[in-house]
Length: 495
Image (tube, rainbow, N blue to C red; front, side):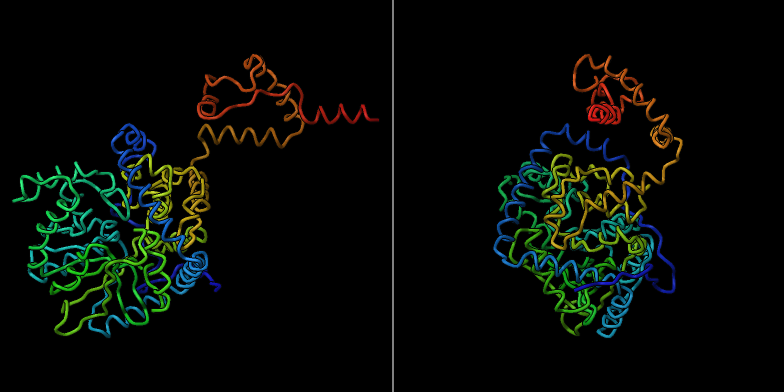
């Protein structure tokens, strides 16, 4: 399959490209500063190392069972590219089909609009609380905080999200938000925050799960409103899909009277046949399973069965701006599997909080800067060794390393040309463009041999600004003669 790409981003509701993303996309500090703090936490590194190794091994095992895995990856990549090329058409078809089946579609240009829409819908029901299915889109726009600001209580029902919420923490992984916590830490959180919890609760996984189940069961049964994300939205039928492993999603999607789904506009797929490809790629790449234990699909409203009021909020929040980037738009292919996080040596050591965004790891290092504009997350494209492991495991073959390099270049071009680095390179360009100056500079560089004292590299303790280079790189000792001088000498002797 080949896909054409649009010359410009589509417009929605007659509006030009939507504003850049806001919400939980911008970090409070740079990645290097946050990573240095994380590296000093030995317990965090131990938790991350154990968890990512376990998930990585499970994924490798189930992927190895699929003889045509690379063909599936290629199909997923091609389907995503083709969908992005006609995204406006597919979204309009999705809206028609959802509306025809009794649902209501809302369009949100940014996080503020999305939060206003959802808050208004919840308040209209008269309820003071909602239950939620794990959703990256609602985390991205800081929906919980927006609802709590108007007095609406929010209950996360995914186990890991519940741990994070009760611990007044932040998620640190796309798939396993509490990956930075171990069993003893989770037991302490439950004992401290869950009303009526058994005082004899241990850190045995089954006991922890049962305590959470008991805590959530009452909230499921009394909930009148649920909020979900969506893994996929099928345009041809208006069907929304949520895949999960615990059953909490099924409870939220079937029991309440009102269901509100917030979906990023890039999650649409054209047909049911397309969904077939992604339902093979996603579970193996995320949880290391052959299929998700719970795959829930619904289209609009069915009288007498499930929620009787359904709202779909289609979220832009910077996505059309990403679509306009010929290199960066590939980041919109992401299906949020988190495979790239589990193989990334940087993530494994620094953890998700260091990224300062709801999207951590390699995909976060490109997606967050693209959604907000590079300068609002300028350090993230550098949060990578460019080893390429993320590309190798991505189920839709997103070339993350190439996009990282692209964003780094964009950041450099955006800087003022008065920095020490810019001045140095301008001077170097002038010298290298003039043969006479270049030869003089080469001869002058031989003075560096006095500093090396016979060693192959110059000492690290050189004065600024050279010290900025030598602190992390070896600067070779200048040769006794230049290439041109050696060439001239050898060819003269040959005559």
